[in-house]
Amino acid sequence: MATKRLAFVVRSLPYKTEASRLALTHAIASQSVEIYLADGDLVEASIAFIGDGVLNCHKNQAAKHYDVTTLEGHMKNTLLLDLKVLVCKEDLDRFGLTENDLLMDAEDIGGETNAQIVPFSEIAKEMESVDHLLFC
Amino acid sequence: MADLKSQTPTQTLDVLGRVCPYPLVLTKKALEKLPEGGLLKILCDAPASAEDSLPRFAQDKGFPFEVVKLADSWEIYIQKP
Image (cartoon, rainbow over all chains, first blue to last red; front, side):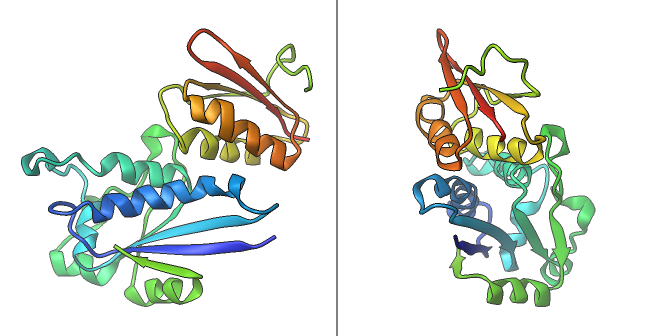
């Protein structure tokens, strides 16, 4: 029995690219692959938003103005499934964003896990501790 | 296959309208919280989840399960040993 740990590091804007949406989709999908793995093998996934990627966490995104669908559903589903979501504090500060500006929980759909605003040093530790690192 | 559908479920999980992988992942989460011996009833209308991933998961874990096909959805019963 083994556990493979993945971290998706989102650096892309929430528009002009599908990268952040794909990161969330793959992180969510990774939680179902154990049924195809050897007995007892598991996959754990975490998601870190850094750089421009922190803008994906902004609530009330006006996505329709950019001809894309909102990421809000993906973000909430990620928290609903108890995935670890880390948001870089230094990059939030750079954009003048605070916790009040972000989608931090999914309580309205039964989620029990909150996103965490952490210094980059903590995200770096997470990146060093995983088996596979995927930049999006 | 155990006769589970005639028993009173400990919890009912409604994942109607949700597609793969949510039915499976939410089922795993519900089973983690279910007490030993508890019976989980899942309402699902995603064919891939109802006919493949949920039975496969229960089988791999060695959990007794039963799948009941309704007109346009499924009831899946999984017992936590």
